[in-house]
Length: 383
Image (cartoon, rainbow, N blue to C red):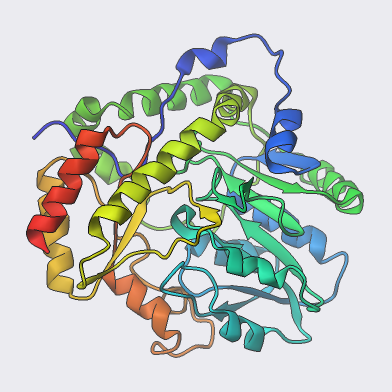
């Protein structure tokens, strides 16, 4: 079958990059998200690294708490900043910290914590940490969740800092890119100094144009399906141990501005597509679906399904792929299996379970109701 829907995608309006430079991206983003200060870089990893570099100037603490089930790039950013990663188990229900385990992980050495909204899933329970007496910084990792809402408000300004990703696998893809947002003038002055010191370069705009054109054609399921054997080999299987620290070029800023202007509509479609899957599979006992609270509206980057039996996971993965729907296992090893961080392999029970039992399926805005119906029917048939 040539036709194939990618696991993540978004409608690209390539003509946006040829428009005149009359847009005010930072003001538009500020009005939507609530971040007074916004800095763009070449990746979310760079964004996190620079935040950590700034925080070191305000504190001599060294430990950074992160979920045990998350992207390896977080650990690389922490290590590059010469800080110490400390892991915490997560909830199977919403993929964020298990609160009690998190509270037990906080110590006098804790500098900050990275709250990761995996797959775009948000939870209002995490906001209980906002008014805690913990003397630490909070970083809201919205790399997979730009457009998600808690209490009808976009995530990204609930805590001290937020990071965003515009990589080709994210909700607002411009091939690569990232940003950091916050509301403190003191931190803005500090990060300004870091940027000057780093002397950030940006990618050649011709190369950026080629990357965007490539991305534009890949959102078409027929083109994606035809070139899938090649594209699948080009996809990142592992994260680089080091990363470039660069700026974000103007061509991609224009494309990102298009996504920001249409964030409300695109995010709503992601949420409704995910809710369709949730509503149609909620009665099956051999799978675990994300628990979405009434005050949360995830802009699903992809939809996670946890299978109690691995043979069922493998069966459905193959069936969906055969019907033209790309799937993803995401992180097949928790972070304490990837890095030697002083933990045992059987630590972090939930993270271990998720790494082995989770499968994600597409719910992006390019899918039509008939596509969602077909996916659901394929899954039901094989459960």
